[in-house]
Image (tube, rainbow, N blue to C red):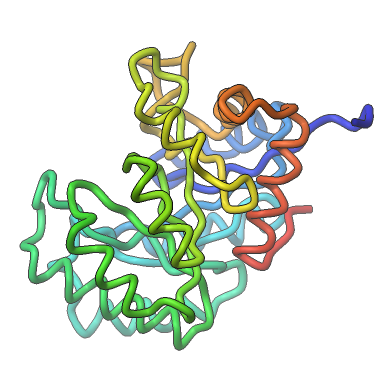
Length: 262
């Protein structure tokens, strides 16, 4: 262990959900907290351009994923497909995401979600980019789609909540797993059990800002400055030194997304 302070990367934060005139302060608070970089995903046609602009505004600290969240899967028309194809090749874009399935709210029909997922997985393959995968109450359908692409698929199942047996399935596909602030929640023993089953070399830490603020910030908007709290909880679960978890998870982000931060 050295005297060099730990540096973290927030592998998933929705900076487009921050008021535009507050983003600079949010990024600066993250830097002050030891967060070297932030990966922020697009979710729908309305936030794609702003997501790309964030990458231009903060090129050393913010990297971008472009994609369509399953809530908005019905928006994937020919026009938006073209926009995503163009965006995938832009500077600062390191992944296709946030994509996946969400059967909890069913804001888009199941068929539309599956079609959007398949098309975006194809886009990721063509663009040679990893994916950021959303899953809620949908693993039974999601796993076969991902398994069909085993060997060529790269990516992370973000803010994961499935049990240890499913963790093994994810790791067998060669995917990474993102752990969010839920790992700090008092009653979230299931998340801690899941975290304990993850190989540290496949683990990312995230805030999923502005959602899921970790203890002691529950009840207020989450932000990337809080990701060290997630990392500290992960370190406790794994019985590892905090600085080592910071180093390993940072290396994982760089390896998965092929990028560096400043």
